[in-house]
Figure 1: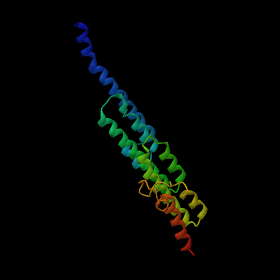
Figure 2: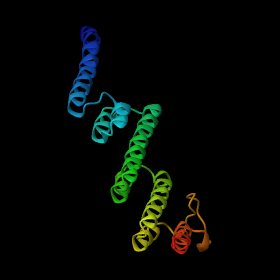
Figure 3: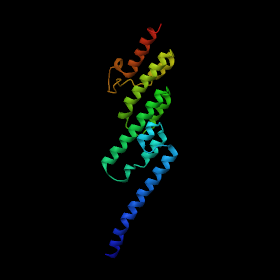
Figure 4: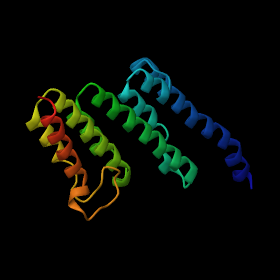
Length: 174
């Protein structure tokens, strides 16, 4: 019984020390990345900082589904922000690698990729770099529409839609 009371006595100290380590990491990240949390890091385009703060979440530590959902939502937020940033800088390969490297489901990645392919095709068509535009169109799937839904009609596929867009822009750019 005496050990039980000692155990109960030390629990608050243990919990405080765990929280203390998290606070120490947050202070370290704040100095290192010059941002205070995930949203602050994203607003400053400090994606490594946002990922570092995400690492403090650790949803695997327990079976709390709400924490796991929150973690996934934060991860999605970071991937979307970084992919949009790089595509806005016309760094489409980098944006694609960010999406591909994420641990998110293919159902989540697919619409991001399709949107990226579309932006890359339009950008390269505006530069009249038809071969590069075509190479991006060919990355799009044959079995998916631009919305991401499955299709068995090849003419409705994302790839076909992007190729048609290239042809239209090419023919009307003269």
